[in-house]
Image (cartoon, rainbow, N blue to C red):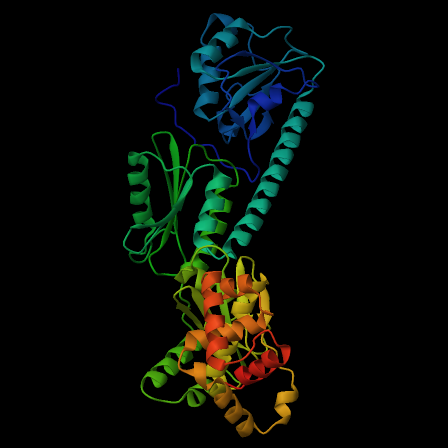
Length: 494
């Protein structure tokens, strides 16, 4: 058993992952054989070191496979305490295992050394004559290189998966799901007040959950010197907590049954992404946005405050996720993907005001409608254009639809005359917006009942009833292509 008076040296951590002793024993080319000590699969080696010193303690860092040919062993060693002293010093230094070479000094491993290794629970490995110590050391480093490569590959794949999850319509739950899957445990986002905002993975026992929540409080900003991450373990579960960098008091917690190499890096990547998703970045641009909002609330016209937001024309984008209704975090992530912080979440639609020089692209999991590029005074009409484009995108199952901005035949007519004709033609249904919008959508989708129902989020029978009502009030035949063309012309002038 270890000497209680001997100083304890914690093993240093090298830049490469450790190698399980079992992996080294499995190398057939080395023909190593464990003959004493515990056969624990969790025993790992950080490096290999050769020494013939009677007291190797001062030369060990911890975690070594110490290799010796027994040159230091005196002839009368078996009858005294030599081997007990020798093994106890290796254990006190943090040595992971002892490898004993059968050549050139000894033909067999001394029985007293075997007994001492059993007593001090130090794995003892017999190194056959044909295996050199340099070959053992090389094998250790080969296994380390393989483990390092596997770790880098795992971390890279995790980074890619986490980044893809952050671009989904539900970015926070998606990132947490990916993190929980990658570490094989449970991931949870804590809000500023300590409540669980979202989580993923198999929930741990109540005691583990409580311990993780307590660890998250350790990293929550409370003044100078607050750590940004902390680790602990309870009930055989490894715990880790990370402060999110937005400074809003959010924290990430991770609970896993075991801690693999690379887990800290993977969790750190998730923490950075969650910081971006939950943070509200204050800058000169943010101050300008706040100033523009205040001026609008105090009565300034949009054209006057638009200069605070940037120069040039603007696009209005309406977006709706394919599955669940969007939340504020998903809306913010969409705005970031489109390159604009000017985001509005209204019911089940997200509206984004985007500078025209940042061409919107289709986003996975979203249907987008994009207006024509307009100056600030035309923002309301662009908002309508984007809404109609989104309806068409959803009806046609397109990822992105843009409002057409080509000049048509109708543009050859004086605008006043065109508007007067449109008001006169549509007067019978003008007082019922549901009829007007249904007719517009139905015509834009070439009379498709099903796609119009999808675009308006109503039943197809409702579409039929409204179109029938429009035909009756307008006293016209909606199957006539000339009638449809004239109505479409009028609806575009509204």
